[in-house]
Image 1 (cartoon, rainbow, N blue to C red):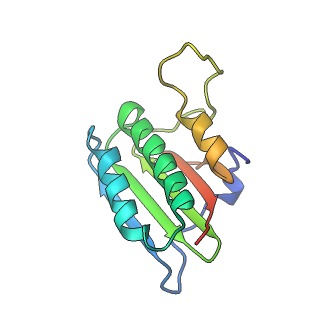
Image 2: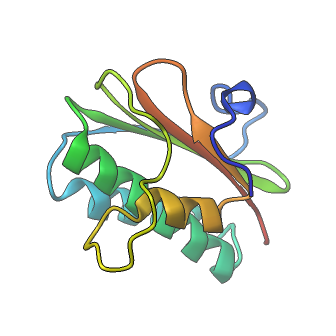
Length: 140
């Protein structure tokens, strides 16, 4: 697992008709659940159950962070190629440090990026806006 590597940020959805979504959400409490439903309906038949669960967890954590700490609307982009699920969540904020806060088992919340780091093969932050991208190995 590798974090905070802006040089390997995913490009726009891959070409060649690969399964992909790009959707905007209002920054509301309902956005993470709506994003999970969209991902499950679009990719549920394409990915192994364990991979889908990992993708749903990462999407949920990043969408929740965008809702709680971001600004403006939230964009989710996700694409699957032969061996990788590539995704990113972006809000209209001005960015952030891109590092998980120091571990504190007593703290309620604040563990989302640490979870992303454990689940994703690679992840990082974009150079502009508030953007977090991830790669998860795809099992089909």
